[in-house]
Length: 370
Ligand code: SF4
Ligand code: SF4
Image 1 (cartoon, rainbow, N blue to C red):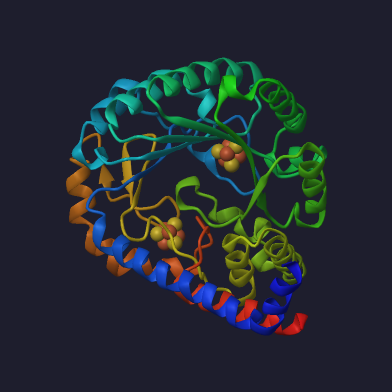
Image 2 (cartoon, rainbow, N blue to C red):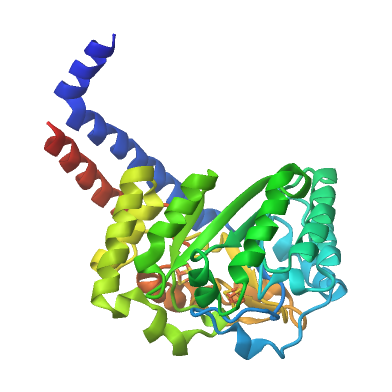
């Protein structure tokens, strides 16, 4: 049987790849069509919940916003009463550092009560305040279990030892994160349904990225890699020339090779899209925020179509979030979408054009192997 399968693969290898990827392209065309036409109200809420942060990462400008006031749980509840949030299925909670928000538990309670279709909460943390994270995650997990909601937590791991401290602008950042990780790993289901790590690639850590890979392999953990990018919400434009691998040809090449290697290893579209982004300077990935599937709500009630390049279209504390979202649609379609081709944020699945590029790559690969 194995030999027959191998023979078929040898004879029709190229054609099988061709058919498989063509089916994927057709499915994506249908999905994109539905996406453009279906989202009156968003399904994803990106919710940076506080301006406060105890770190000063090399690719982040949140420090400039630390004096700004966050909404309280009650104020958040009033905002979320608006029909715009009635179809939210997943909420991404980040910051700042979400665990510095004193009323985080109350906010999660309000989110659960206000979003009747909620299925998933994903939290991103720097992992520094071990005891607070442990205590609050137990409470959050309990609330989620009672309401049949899954909760995931991802920690930012940008390097090992001194590299994590350098990237995150905080001494002992690595030590604290490892302690938090150790405690959560001991009894993961008490705290969350999914534990993961995110790593942001910059000029600082790209040459030592192998250490993160090794750490992940040794600990049997998965790390999701992203590219540091300009991000309006975290006001990091002034740091761009220092952190972006796009500005430094040698580092850019290292990052490009790294993402291609990740693609070969995982076969994930995300890594092929990041590789293409570096190679061609263009985005070949779709984005949930392009056509209104997602919305961003900032810690002062500001509404944006996305967190990266969208302007704040208004403040949901004073105006109807639904009206803001609907009335500014022209801005989204005519202006914001112009920024998308240069944006490397929220890169997961390939766009249709990206899939055609992948098809060419896979077909050539099959031919090379013969
Ligand atoms: S990236 Fe996150 S942890 Fe780092 S300074 Fe910004 S908000 Fe804080
Ligand atoms: S600018 Fe980036 S994050 Fe915003 S909608 Fe476009 S691709 Fe998505």
